[in-house]
Image 1: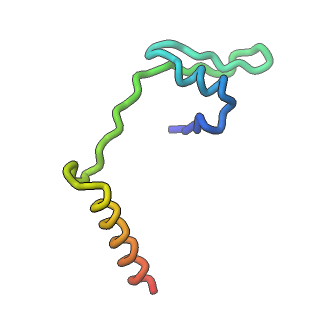
Image 2 (image 1 turned 90 degrees about the horizontal axis):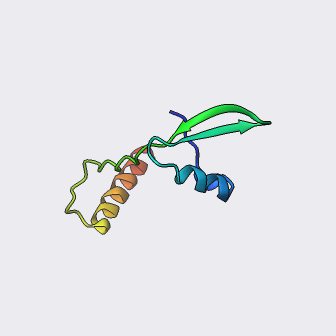
Image 3 (image 1 turned 180 degrees about the vertical axis):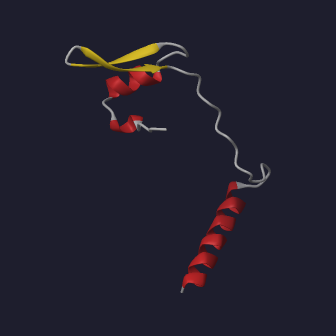
Length: 76
């Protein structure tokens, strides 16, 4: 899948893409000719990772830091 970072686009283009309704088509035009077509879709909910939903962000950050530190210590 190709990825397009909306933060790197001009604001007008980003707003047009974000505002596309599910099923609505956005034509990509260059020099008056259609070069592509995008179809709006419903935003997919972000999948939760396998982390504990009851875990506090501070606890998760501590766990990640400990894993990072352990991997660095293993390298050196």
